[in-house]
Length: 425
Image (cartoon, rainbow, N blue to C red):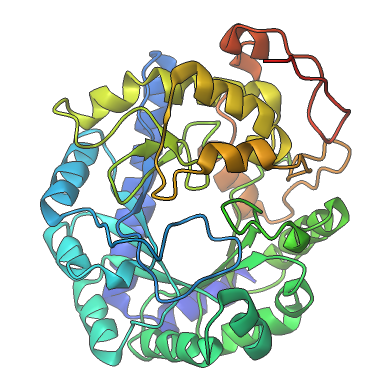
């Protein structure tokens, strides 16, 4: 499998783009992780990766979307992005995930890439705006990988994303990328309506045949004003996803990404272990994309490193998330997250202004944390990479108790182990 993957990389991608990926995302990305680990040992903090929603607008209206895509357009200006990336680079960062809305609706997206050729960008997109001309420019720049969202077959794509001919337009964007030999990925938010179509060997084989180099299976999070909780996966289905990913990693010549487990199959949360935080189109620094609360902003006059390191809200979020569960605190313990928001008087960063009410109405459900069902990595390379550069970095062992963080007594545990009783407010 490793030789087949190497052969694909050498024969199906532009060699210059492959070199830039290996150097910027591989070599310099590892250096960023090593700096992150050294900072942690000194009691300092700055995430090695940042995910940035550069614009709120989108041409689609997907089920479960938490972004105010229909609101007045808001985007991070070119000048603000320059400062943000420059100050992150001073901390050793080279990788940035660009999100939206739809990031290709940002009129200066390509200029952002041009100005920071020493960085690598992963662009989360529906693919509809990747024309042949755009794909050609991405190839010329060589410092970005499009990650194209495919949410199901023709029928499901229209249903999930509330559009017409969504699949056809997405596939056209994908073909434009592959025609120009871009290092291209496909992601899917697995839910009830697409798991049987997308979580299959047949789908992976089709992507390999097309020339896709990596795939990322997210797990659907029922959040936002149109949460659609009926789409959420059951614990049994989440087990099925984990087993499939581990098996296919050892079998198929395509990279399969996940952000929920370490090399031993133990669940983790990227925000809880501190490897990333999220920045909204308004510049708010949030714990992760689905937690739309903040006390800090990139528009602060202080350096970004100082703002993030000094944020009590972000620090206590990481501690609380690590104390409460190895899974997703938003799904398993929205009650605790609400208490933290109230403690810090974190502002609602949405346009709709209903994020706290949405949090209060959320029903607790299991996430990836399933301590009785841990599936270690079978692939030697994945196991090695995760062991050194994607594990919990001691976050779960070092986290203080929930009561210490919140200043109030809370009984119970993760929803995957037992019920809880909350204090009355």
